[in-house]
Length: 195
Image (cartoon, rainbow, N blue to C red; front, side, top):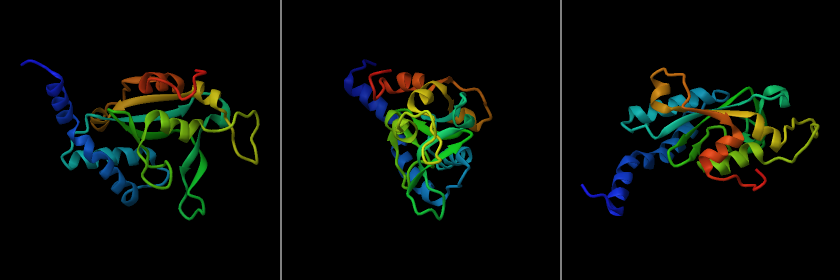
């Protein structure tokens, strides 16, 4: 077989055909099956649901994020987390011991705790909006925790696990590194040129 641009495009489209259904399923799951404070279970159930519906989940990855530094008592500081049930706000700053979200092969993030509506976003945009978009500070302001952009880029560690492997019980990530390294590796560039 001779490969040309049309053949490569067709093969790519066939391999990623199931990715077209991911946003629709995510939207439905976001509203109907979300469990507060259970980010890992939400992602695993999302993968299971897609798989049980006959979708190929080989293009999906589970990502964990942890604070390996000392800011915010070692907690992950999120800036635009889904507000708690009954809150008057749409989003709020939250601090977690860890956080888990899904990402597909083209770099779209699916996070059940991000914003107040299902909002798949490109990896670099999501990271900037959810974690990095805060003023640099050395002390908490108005009683809120503050880690700062530079601290988060260096201290937050991400681990990437393939969906099929994690559902079959594998606990070995295929990639692990700092948030700064992840942005360079998986986004091609950082929003700010200073890194």
